Image (tube, rainbow over all chains, first blue to last red; front, side, top):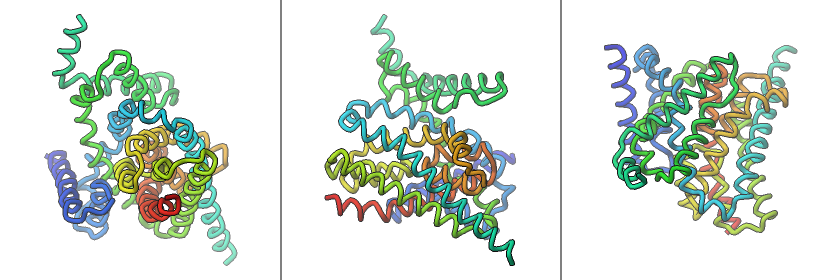
Length: 121
Length: 235
């Protein structure tokens, strides 16, 4: 029963996000609408963590598996992608490392500096 | 025999699901037996499924008939990223400056990279636009690309490459750069490699998962704002 209820709540939020997306067609996907909605439901206390966390954690654990079909879909773009293969490879590989490095270093710098400030007080 | 195969696959509802589960399970089993992560299950499953389809001359649509049951669950799974986000809310709020600085710097670096590619490869505006949304989640990226005049299918392929590569390389690369703060690690993964990276960040740790989830949202937002401006400059 517990799992059934949690599955229902998560499915209902997904459905509600779909409705919001239909009414408010911004370039925001249903999943991000739903993420914001679930977050505010939890934050406001309307929904307790215990009401979603078992099924929720299972879905999070399965996420890499759930991404397989979308990843495999690259084979449908094999013909078109050849036109700009080199830029795609450079941005997909080197570009990803660049963004990861810049974000991580910038964030760590800010965090350490603030920690340092606090230590001086 | 060949006809029998094509007739069978055209109506098979389970083939794609079994293939996806089996390849993923195989990678997980190898990792578990060897006691450490030798192969990334997402990468392995993607490559093997793609090879089976290409070598067997099986259409993606046939594969998707079964694989769609995994694909539909991706939306509620992404929504559930709100759970680690909520649990780590206090920590994230306290470090709001780091979140915005990190994601902002990452998006700026990405845009600079795109401009560099534009100049280096003398790209057309439509090709440039195709690369702009590559660090964000597929659902936003593909439609944003098409809306601005890029090639949606290529954007999609670039996003997938980015996500899988980011997820595979993140632990080693972050270690190499001595990015050890869990919050900074999560932000770096989410900003560079969207949901695929985040699925890995969740495995690394709770704080990493939460920061990465938040980074998807912030990066998506910043890209949606910045991409149209850059697209106009290029066009």
